[in-house]
Amino acid sequence: MKTNLKKSLLFSLLLSLNLFANEEIVIIQKDSLELKTKNTVLSVGGRVQLDTEYAWPKGIHSAKGIVLGESVGESGHLNFTAKNSRLWVKTRTHSELGVVRALIETDFKGVEGTQTNTNSHGIRLRHAFVELQNWGAGQTNSAFNADTTLDILLTAINDTLVRQPLIRYQYDTTLFNYTISFEQPESTLIDSSGVIITPQDDVVPDIINRFIYYPKWGQLALSVMGRYINQDHAVLGDGITQLNSRDSAFGYGANLSGKIKVFNLDDIRFASHYGKGVGRYLAYNAYAAGSISDEGKITLQPSFGGDIGYRHFWNNKLRTTIAYSYAATKNNLDDIKLNLNKVNKSVHSSQINLIWTPIKNSLLGIEYAYAKRKVESGEDGEIKMVNIMIRYDF
Amino acid sequence: MIKTLSTALVILFLSGCSQQTSSLTVSQEHTVMSNELKSIMHEMNMIIYNKNHSELDRDNLRRREAMNLGVNIKKLSNKIKDLNLDKNIKKKTQFNNYANELYKKGDTIYTLAYNYEIDKLEASYQNIEKTCTACHNKFRK
View 1 (spheres, rainbow over the protein chains, first blue to last red):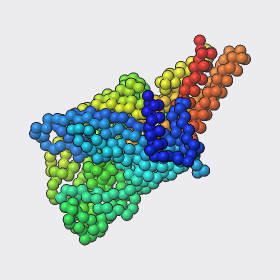
View 2: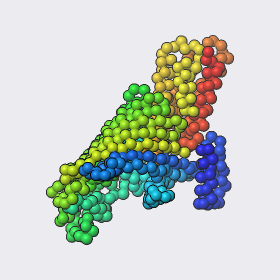
View 3: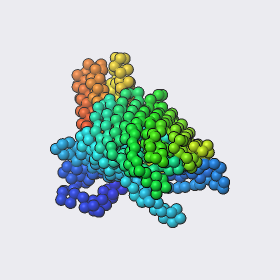
View 4: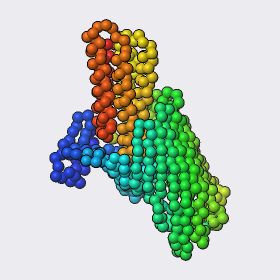
């Protein structure tokens, strides 16, 4: 069934895109299904995923999505979605310079329809990336991302995931990997009214060095980032006021993540991050890189976070992770005057799950999460969530 | 399949693929190596669940693990030859042929991984399993 599905997808792609129009096409079905020309192998895959979430009170398990205060009349909300399903196409081509590999990956978290009838979800680009020898270019995950993450169903509250256009160079050995990456800059600054603005005045790419060590006892990754935060006659959060000034600042950040193998198949996973001006690289842009005064002066702010989790295998097909994660920032309250209830300060979350893989590449899991968020006005809010996930990667 | 392969490899290494595992040191080394191989196979099975990795990143990880697996299988095949066998020359030749076959298949896994032919690795793992099973059937009591 899996093979038939892949075959259908390959034929559909072939017909719709008229790919390899002038080349002989061979479909090989022994051991694995490939669409093959003289030099290129194309394969298709993806993921079908159903998330069933019940949250009380209504809200989102994220550093800026937890509703503040007592939620009157909002005892809970049940939501089913398949928008986290994915589809990818990748190619491998032998060239005179080496193997060229390319990937286009999408999910369905684009423009949303309603839940009343058809639950439409627009396709959205995740990755468009090509690699040749040690070089890679396109859109993919930032090298600043934690390389080892918690084995949990919901996204970690301190997640350092950023996906953006970049150019990178990698040097790889069996024991370690070194990456230097030049990535799309995007300054985020919070103004006096508590609104995070993006001045769109960036002039230098964010530069990230990453070192990953692969010892027998686990894995350790350290990413160090330097970035240039800039504003040049930026427009403030009201959309009207344009500053008559320029300012800039140098920001930096570090992200340490890893796992340590312990008993049998169990492991301990952890991550720790700190940075001044790290902003959007932590907790899905819950915190700004810094503040911008009414005169246009930039003051970068420190942000930090971490997580730790223990993953236990009950047997080869059944596992549990218990995890705690935290993220926070120190906002510059000298610059921020209004709407302090919209200015995120800190968040923490605890999660526990049970994940079953009845067949290879499948996942059936249930997870409970409790999270609490604080803002600069002193208000806080909390959320409890149960997530049931059914997933199959093909 | 991978579970079966892991089990087969563990049995192979623990038994030393021979009824005459008189050298305890070699046997212990096999046990250590089998645990390493088991660990590598487990890591490969879990790559699909890694977050924050694209499909190319996952292939890079599979490649790394497969190259490690290939190197370890080759080391293992050399180690097997050090085992004490009975004095039957024919049996010893047969046994060494299996060891050589294992070496070649380990080398194939390494080469496929090196060339990013990740989609062909699954078949190669099955070939290793066949060699293990054939050796067991022949030599294990």
